[in-house]
Image: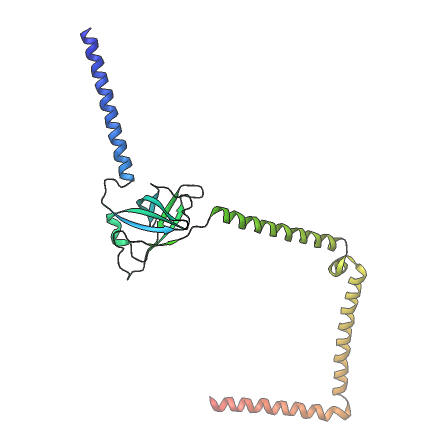
Length: 240
C-alpha cells in the first residue's frame, strides 16, 4: 500500500504545484496589463457622459496602450470623474494641454480613453492633474441622424420618380418637349428659320457695302481701321 500512497502524494503535489504556477502566471499577466507592477502616475478628467466606459478599460496615447481606467466616480448630476493610471515612462510625452476623449475598440468593441498629443511648447502634465475632455458622440444620436437622412433620401427619391413618370407620360414642359413630336418639329423649323435669316442678313450687308451711296462710308471706315492698326504697329516698333 505504501508505493500506491507514495505515487498518489506525488501526483497531488504536482497538481498543486501546477495550479499554483498557473495562478501566479495569470496574476502576472493580468497585473502587467493593468499596470499593477509598473510605476504609474495619476491623471483625471471629467465628462458629462462616459458612454459605457468601465474601470479597467485601456487608455491610448498615439495609438499605444499606456494605461488603464482606475476609477469612475459620479460627482453630481452633470459630472463624472474618471481617474487614470498612466505608465511612468510615458509621462514625458503627455502635456498639460492634452485632451482626453472616449473612443472604442473598433465599431462594436469596448470603450477606451484616448489622450491627444499636446503642443510642443506646453509643460508636462503634473501628478493628479485634470486634463480637458471631449464629450463622446452617442450612438443613439448617430442613428437618429442617419434615420433623418434616410427619410430625406426617401422623399427625394419619391419626388424624382414622380417627375420621371410625368416626363415619360408627356406631362409638363419637359415631358412635352421630349414626347411631343410637333414641338420638336417646331423647334427644328425655328432653328432653320434663324439660319436662313442669318444668311439673308449677311447677304444684305454685302449688298449695302456695294451700294454706291454707302460705299464711301465703308471705305472711310476701313481706312480709319487701317490707320489705327498701322499706328499701333509703329508704336510697338518704337518701344522695341
